[in-house]
Image 1 (cartoon, rainbow, N blue to C red):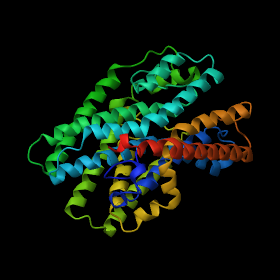
Image 2: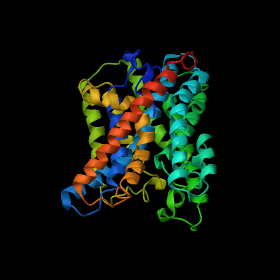
Image 3: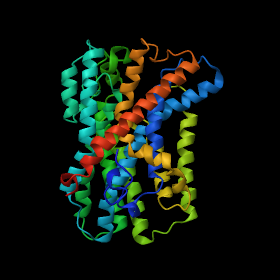
Length: 410
């Protein structure tokens, strides 16, 4: 989860290079982060017990899980933009060493702390968890996403599954960019054609994965915990398939960089384009609000999160907001900018706070169990406050100082 700074894509430097930001990206990131949080909160509310209005609200909130796909699109856009700019202006390939250092500084410290605390929580809260040490070590290596046993690196903090897959996209993107830079004479159409070819290769490899690596039915299903749930999700949730989501962001970055090099003018047509992308996202959420859990079977290659329609809508929203006159500023309001800044901490800590509230309420705050709306609101607010507090502390005490260190900036 990178930031909206384009020249150097990390939130720590956003205040220093504000002239190279994508308008609207903070708003989209904040919506994605809070969407994921609310999807997990509304899982705890009893289903179909409070009338049609609450049922609609619960269905919409639980589709906040789609925010994971939006995160991949955002990262693809923000991280590939410097490469696209260099390509289109005839500059040399950006330093891969610096890129790797920045990614490590942004992801590793915060993730390792959250993963380790979550692992200790597993030992305390879930003593019967299957293979906890193996899963934890796989999480530390960022290789957990390659096998159903380790897909969820810790039982106490399910959302950490996506970090491994995103890190794989961090690796694949610059490697693929190398190919574009050796094509010879640089033209926008040539770069676009190259990435169409990359997409075709990714889809072919993903098709091979989803038809070859099918887990056995033994211990399969969420009734067997996260490991059983991983056997439900895999092989459709895999690093190659999620790189396709990332590729949509790379395509959006290519258009943004091309327009910025060509003109950079802000026009009302971009406001309309961005609004169309947002309405596309909203429509997909509304029309898939039931069943409550976001399904993925039946999508293209059985990919999760309505790929490619949801990812494309997010990419269109980014392209439109980037050069809009008004829409981007509305999306990037003060609350959205703050939430985007601490969004990584919110993402990696909120589910552990859900587990803590469940423990403190003697199991009341568990899946589909909370009957009273007032109690649900109180417990959800507690999770939100704790998540923002920890994410804020993590940003100011660890993430930001590391990003601004001489090692990370050199």
